Image 1 (tube, rainbow, N blue to C red):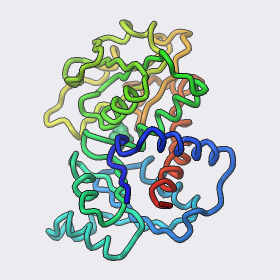
Image 2: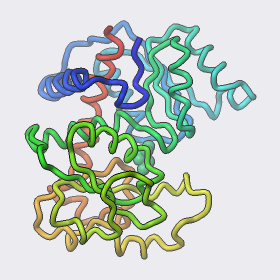
Image 3: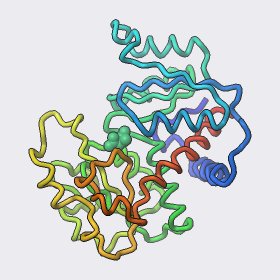
Length: 291
Ligand code: ASP
């Protein structure tokens, strides 16, 4: 039984196989490979893209999906998460897709070895399917040749599980990663760090902009995000005519993370990320459930 708690759970050969499948699925929808499978989703935090993307991916492959709404479940009556999980596993689904505010929840549930657990976002620690779809989008954009390419991650890096998983995956795959953030958003990582975008803009091939994770800040970090935007918003003025691939995991805070104008610029691939997310998740479900 294999789980996906972080991208480190996959070998490089597996990632290659998943991406080959995702590419093939993007060209032509496959037959219903998972028509005898049933997945349960358990999202303890809000989600727009990830939950619907998993559901679309599962249904494209013919699998059934049952959503449990934790706000109406017995965890609200005092049942522990482990007990809720064991009860769901007793119904013999083929996998559980979970999002939770704590970093270690998916690993703790996976360690029970009851069923494949797929992490759809855990605290500030990991969001492996987002990292994989981001990397897939980068590879596709550069036709597989990422040698010597540099990605700048810009924004609230310290609170972002997307950045955390992304940094582990991108560095493993040989991308150069640089971090651009104001001090309160900068993590303790052994990577090149900058406070201003203009310091790196001429030497990067990819910019990944991130939302300020307000829900994870114990106290407000910036009073005024319009002031923050003056330094960190990705605008046409900042990009100029440089050929830079612009990514963002969503939700985008318009004119704070990325300007309206840049969101409709052809260099911005936010919707391509969303589109690729379905194919990558289809390939991941196939990899984990058809063993
Ligand atoms: N959707 C991503 C996540 O769940 C990014 C974000 O919320 O800013 O982590």
